[in-house]
Each structure stands twice: as structure tokens, then as C-alpha cells.
Length: 394
Image (cartoon, rainbow, N blue to C red; front, side):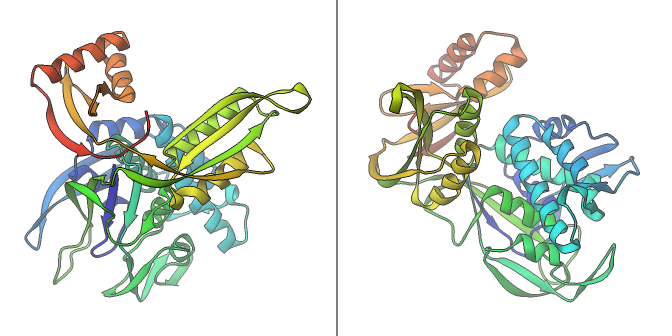
């Protein structure tokens, strides 16, 4: 699933979270992911608002815990407890990006940086909540229009600072931006960190079959326009054939746990597929060949990920063309739990993650939930039909 962000008046963590909820992200799963961090003294609510005639969602974080400032290491630790694991990984990446930038700006070690405004409940709820919303919606690619940057100055913990804030500018390194006539902070460090952690690309919406659009309202009221960010979801549209890159490296000195972790990280970071094959290497040593299938635009970050996680000293790059068959999704209700079914020309297959979630809640075997989901589809009870013409090779 592609998420295209249109930051009409800017982007903040709460606006992105609200827009994703407006587009269909379930609030209960978002709250559950935040609760898993162990953070206490908070409540997340969402309301419908109308701003200059446009209906949108606004979120509120109600805080009863006065502990609003933390060191970066404490915030990273809380974020790492979020569930499920992909949500924690994205949240940790966003918090770590903030800590590294603040560390450079204040000439301090990232873990020891004292986060002032960014160490409170709001920031952690926005970051973990947005990560959970993206995961719940099945988003695998984030694209944003250029970000409008305001002007003037802002009042921070260290006094008056130029706008955009130094942390925001550092986090937006490599991003596409544009000026705006709006005064004040239009892009916050939290919004910038989330885009960076998502590996967002910038530009117009890519070819996709349009799904729902959600509008997230900010707290500021503007005199002449709605203060909103919009997200549009869509399934990628492909021609059936596309150029791909296969990254390979031989490994004989990593554990199975490291190999499995690297494959999981690659899939979370945009790989089309990732796998390992056993091999007998020089001097008769047993080893593994790690393969990562990717599009050219995701090649570099995935190459860097494999190098960092495995410690390998070299990676081969192979180019290929793959042919994909059209596929679409239907979502069925299995005793109150949504299960997506991927439907191709020759078979239909329930999505494994949805089966695991439903089976866990219902206390049923995985195969029993899969059978129920397929029966629901055949009986014509499927809802929320969405077309998809490309995806992984599973």
C-alpha cells in the first residue's frame, strides 16, 4: 500500500496521525500499540471537526502524568516496547533520528540528550501512534509532496529560535521543501522525524489505484484556509513487467538469528522479497547466500542495511526483469476480526498477519481461521474490495 502525503499547510506528528485515522486506521490498534510501551498517564481521543468547510479528524492527547521531559535513551526504550515489532522498529528509528540531530546541535551524546518539548507524552504518542497506523493500513511506501516551510521565530526551551527550527532543518536533510506565506512553524521535528524514519520519497503521487483519503487537522486556526494535512492511500499500479535488482552476499560467519533479523528488516524497509539459500563455500564451510529483491529506488538503503546488519565486506548486484500477475484484496469479517485475502488469477490466500491476529484473539488454530475467511469470501460476505496489481512474490 502506498501512502501519499499532501502537507497542504505543513506537517506535524498529530496531523499525520489524525489523517491516517481519518483514512481508516483503527483507533483501538493505535492505542494498543502505545499502551505496550508502558507509558502511563495519557489518553488518546479523536474527534470530527470542520475547518473552513472541510471535514477532518483532530486528535487530542490528554496527559495526567506531569513527567514531560526525558533523556533520549528513556524515550528510545519506551518506543522499543511498542507492539507489534514493525511498529517498534519505525518508532525507534524516528526517536533515534531526533536524538542524533539534537546531539549534534547541542554537542552531546545522542543517548544523553535531554529532550525538552520532544520528551513529553505527546511526542511519543504521536510517533508510536503514527507507526501503528501505517502498519495497520498495510503501508509499505510513503511519498510526500514538497513540505511548505514557514518563517519567523519560535519560542523553545532554550529561548527564541529561527523558524524552521534547527532540529527540523537537520531532520529534513535530503527532503524536498518549498516556501509558504504562512508564519510560524509549519513542519515540526516530530513530523520530519517520522518522514525520515519511513524512508519517504518526495514528489507527485506515483501510479496507483486510489483508495481512501484522510484529512488531519492541526490545532492552529488559520484565517483563510483549512489547517490540514492529507493522506491518500492507494495500491501500486504496474505494467506486469518491471526492472528489479537482486542484492546477494555470501555469509559463513553470522548466526541464524542475525540472518532472520536481516531478512525481516529488509522486508520492513521496502524489499520486494528477501530469502536465504544454503551453500557449501570455500574450504568446505557451510554458509548461506542472502538474497534481497528490490526496485532500483530502494536499492541503496537496502544495500546499506545488509552491510550494517551482517558485517559482510561485499555485495553483488544483479539486474533482472520480473513479470507479475494482477492481484487484488478483499477484506472479510471473521467473528469480528478483519482478514485480508489476496486474490490472483489462480488462487486466493488470506494474509498471514491478519490470520495470526484473529487466531490469537479467537483462540483458534490458524488453519481454522483461514478456512473461515475463505468461506466468508465464497459466501459473498466480503467487503472493502480493493484492487492491487503488484506486490511481493509470495
